Length: 304
Image (cartoon, rainbow, N blue to C red; front, side, top):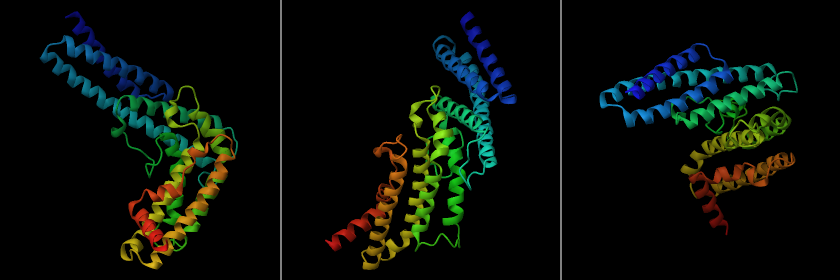
């Protein structure tokens, strides 16, 4: 039918357009065009299923799959390009060894983050999140843009506190890692407010990514810190469950976590842009670990 021919031509044009975008990307333009293309593609496929013959549907479904494959490759490639751009600009400004100071790169970093966030919105709408690789080493943030910022600091944390034979990663001094996280949160306040928040608050970005880069950034560091503490403490809990020595360690860790939470809370709430309920909690994260929670409960029972 004429309608089938029209759909067939549209599929062929979409394939050609996606391939052209993949070969010659223009960041924001590519993201917007790809989003529009997939809208047309989905609409056309629905019509196709209602109007075409079985043989024709099979042929065009193969083309649809080819378009999806090509577009997914393009999405991944664009994502990597954007992340690389952001990482390079941050490194130019001294990240992650120090928080970037105000510079001419600020607006470019923000705009590149917006493009990356919009790309992620497109991927989510297309149910392609499982097909796209993520650079966030811990999977701690739902935002690709924040994941790119967080990656350098997580790598730095792991070098100092989780690497084998690290002088600063001793499991008998978790307070060193806690201080590192608090210091990183404190020094990043102005940078997050100046560069990251405008991207998250852009009217073109879905609010589900959050409104505070500092909250997301802090949450990632707290999650990594909790993972280090529970990993270090795990063997002690398993080998000496219920012992007085283990109980003392667990209580000490719980107290350290509360103190760390108070310090992070003070930093975040002082900005005036973060609610108390949004502040990440090391205590809460540790208590979600079953082994730690049971050890803490056992210790409390023994001391009651």
